[in-house]
Picture 1 (cartoon, rainbow, N blue to C red):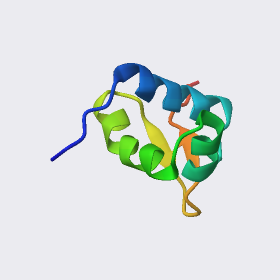
Picture 2 (spheres, rainbow, N blue to C red):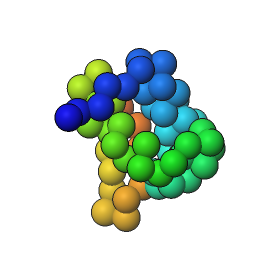
Picture 3 (cartoon, one colour):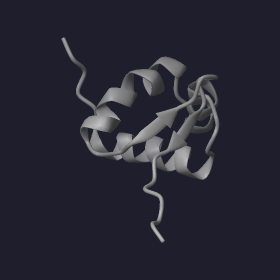
Length: 70
């Protein structure tokens, strides 16, 4: 059964990643006082709600932003 996430919690996770780009989920969880699994499991829900994050080959999270076109 899929878990339902509260929108404010997803916003909190996204804002923490935005303020601390390049951190792994465990580090983000420590900043929030949560478990790593809570952050990891929230990633698909973040995407479903339009909060886009990129994960690099080392597992670090980055906010996804459109690049400006010249």
